[in-house]
Image 1 (tube, helix red, strand yellow):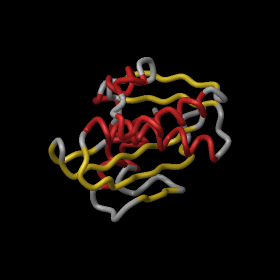
Image 2 (cartoon, rainbow, N blue to C red; image 1 turned 90 degrees about the vertical axis):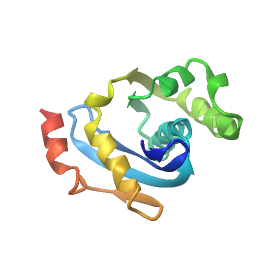
Image 3 (tube, rainbow, N blue to C red; image 1 turned 135 degrees about the vertical axis):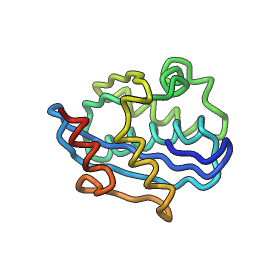
Length: 143
């Protein structure tokens, strides 16, 4: 998640990797004006929705947001405006082999850079290869 204020201009993004940490795809979404919590939750929901569409039913989601981590355990902390979509995603996860973990921000440079890209893009962007702005950090993060 990238934000310029809370609320402020915000974007989210994520990178999908296989079990060997090889790049699969990435996405970035410009969310316009949003709060940090909305942005983090939307990122998690987009990840789940993409995995479902791609039939990737083995999913390990890493987040640097403790609130998103807690939302998987206590769905009532999700704001009402996102609750229906969140509940739909939780239903999808019932068909997955799903794990999630919290990592500290320092360990999430690649996803942060992809999210920052979203601030410069008009809306939803899809990457079938590592975006050039992320390639150095991606290589460093893989080793």
